[in-house]
Image (tube, rainbow, N blue to C red; front, side):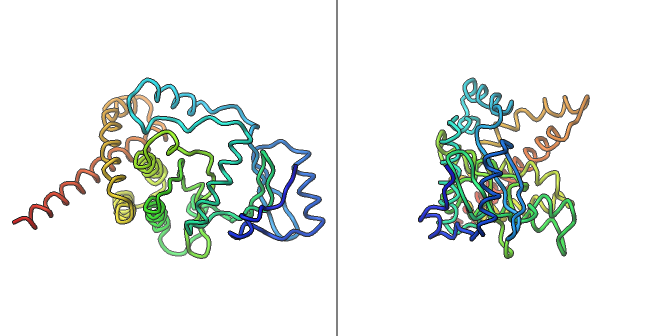
Length: 290
């Protein structure tokens, strides 16, 4: 059954007025289509329909579940598998949590048990960079994305699967969407946040034009805001992942795919960054003791 935004959602600004003809078109689209993601043009502008329960579990989720059972590392555990109704409820709940904490998310226009209708937020950060639709240095959007993720972590939140295709720019602020995962339900929050940063650095390592400079600024921007417990957990995470770097480089000599390259670059960079950060703090503390 289609329902308007709830009272809680309206109080948080999750409401967009629709004309009668738009409501009719929206209801028809919800009833006649089963596509997971669908864009619909209305008189007031475009909206996006997102459905749950229309696709098979992804191979990555299955592999992650297997790895989480076999290896003693919390950050490998997959988010709980839920029913389509529970998945949609989780996504709406997390959007409200982000908005309550002061972060930018798309407005919810309508929702049902297994579908949600969101405002069109325009180009994603990935789209803006790919289409060169930004004045000035596009790498600054990558740095801003990492900094905002650090602020998110400082607020006690975790995105779950951060990627610049799920970030957007609104009124100069980085916004977030796609809240299907909730890793903090199966691991400590610090572990989930550390994994957030590593996952974000995978696309950052591919899209940054000035790679070393931009990744360095992105890490510093995140670390300046992130909790110390999360930074410490990131250090443990990348130490574990870096054990696979020799094998990854060996495979890369035969076939270096884009995913493998991102893993190598992001993991190697973060390993060096957290070690340098730790050494600087140790040196600074020793200097004060003197």
